[in-house]
Length: 187
Image 1 (cartoon, helix red, strand yellow):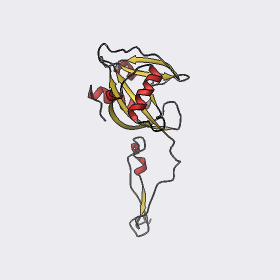
Image 2 (cartoon, rainbow, N blue to C red):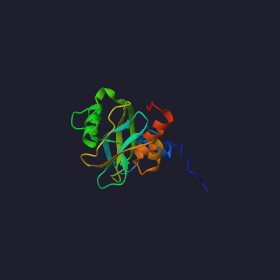
Image 3 (spheres, helix red, strand yellow):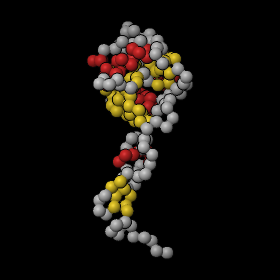
Image 4 (spheres, helix red, strand yellow):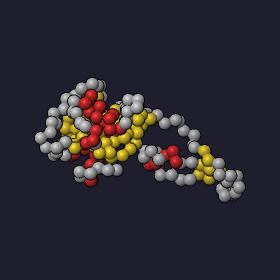
């Protein structure tokens, strides 16, 4: 049986990729090229992406504030889509007030980074999240109330948060960072 010579001029070569690259948001880098150096992306449906800001709120005892939207059973970090012309920190502060009633100055947020995950409440979508964190100090108001489209706003210990139904962004990325790195969750 003859094996085709894939190194011959004009033959197509495909670079192997880690199967987790698409989950990590690196799948767009997987390309095919021919001997002339022409590249093309593999045939696949256009990704459906939602751009959001997600806020990790921790109190002085490391409890984490999560919210659950009305009509859903999955907990997510407070946050949402930026308004036109709004920067990440302004979006974070606005969404915290709208969803939880917590008023936090933008200079208190620590930028964690951009992370990509499956959307919790929109099947078939991914989110690209600008993630920020704020730590509340002892004595600072931690009474949050569900507001806007939020049915529930609840404080969880990291152990309890690991046991609930939570968004992939939180469960797979943010919670492990928060637990592994203690008070610093830079990603």
